[in-house]
Each structure stands twice: as C-alpha cells, then as structure tokens.
Length: 262
Image 1 (tube, one colour):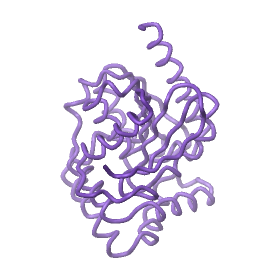
Image 2 (image 1 turned 120 degrees about the vertical axis):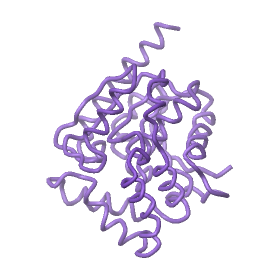
Image 3 (image 1 turned 180 degrees about the vertical axis):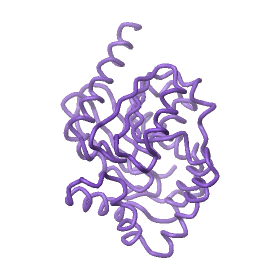
Image 4 (image 1 turned 90 degrees about the vertical axis):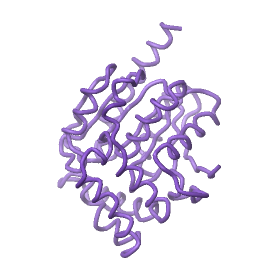
C-alpha cells in the first residue's frame, strides 16, 4: 500500500476529505484547512505519486486512486464528506460508486465526468505526461498554472498555483493520473450515486467549464448546483470565502439529514 501524506486541521465535527486536481496537492486546500477547521475535521491528501506522498508501487488506474482515497477514510475509522476539485472530483464521484458506505456526501468543484467523454480531450490528457517529461515540473507548471484562475486573479495567487504545481507533479504518478482521467467517462454512473452532492463551478472556469458541471448536476439525483462568481477553475482558492460558505451550508444540510434519518 502506497504511503499517502495528508494535511489536517480541526479536531471536531464531520470528517471532510479533500482531493486535489491533477496538477496540484494538499497545498491547494490551504483556504479550506484554515477556514473550515472550526466546523469540521478537514483532511487534504497528496494523491499517490504526488508531492509528499510516496510513488505508487505499480501503475494505478482510476479505481486504484479511488481505493487509496478509501484507505484514507478508513484510517479515520469512519465515513466522510468528500470534496473533490477537478480530477479530485472525478475520484470523488467514482468513490461514491465503488465505496458508497464511506461517502456521507460529495462536494464536486470545477469538475467533469472525465476526459473520456471526448476523444480530443482524452488525447490531450494523455499527451501531458510526455510534456512533463520533456520540460520538467517548473516549466510545465509555468505553462499551465496561469490558465487555472481567472484573468483578474491577483499575481500572488497565480504564483502560488504555479509553485504548488511545480512542487506536486512528477512521473510516474502524474502519468498514471492522466491516463486514469483520459479513460474516465462517468456519465452512466451518475444516476446510481446516492450521496447528496453539491456541484460547484467558477463562472470563469475555462478548463472544464460550466457546461461540464451542468452535466454532473443534471445526471445526479440528490444535487444542488451553484456558481461561484469571479472565479476560474480553482474556485476554492480564488474565492475561498464564497466557496467555503457553500461548503458549510452543504455540510450543515447533509449532516442534519443524516441525523434525522438516524
């Protein structure tokens, strides 16, 4: 089993597991670790092969990453609310299908049903590993990072996003993740997800985009869909106060619903 590094904040309240995007790490959730800690036990992972987590012992497909996330939840001896951004959202959705007993609810932010929904997107995703190998993490991050936030994002945020990516991505982990994303098409699995889900998208997201989030919201049965204004693909970092407010509202509703059923 690959050793997975996590960052934690908060000691009480529901368990919230945060799963980062394909070019990121637990550092992406600094605003959630700080802002949500008074209300929840917040755990943000470095996916296997990313940042401070060990490299996988062998190739991982989507379910391999999903099972690693399930292992993190089990290590806390409970189920969890799962927040996934972009690629992390794809993992979260598949987690709710594969291990429904571990998922109390979902928050899926600036995500999609996977790049396997479109051959061109799948090919572009697969090409990323070669690009990373050719140019290295720092140049790779410098090329991709600025696209993840809106054009009006402060320079400090852009720099932080680039630094996070440069410190997170490496082969073979990133290559496994890209292949997993390229092969993912969860559209037919969405109706079977029982966990209540909040779908969130920045109104200026040009990476996955509003339309991809609408597909998720339309395919899920127990869902709410919200737009975060003045935010690009990384809404949780670009507009953390607005983002966190929606997450807290969702956690409150989901937790109360479980209590009443219990």
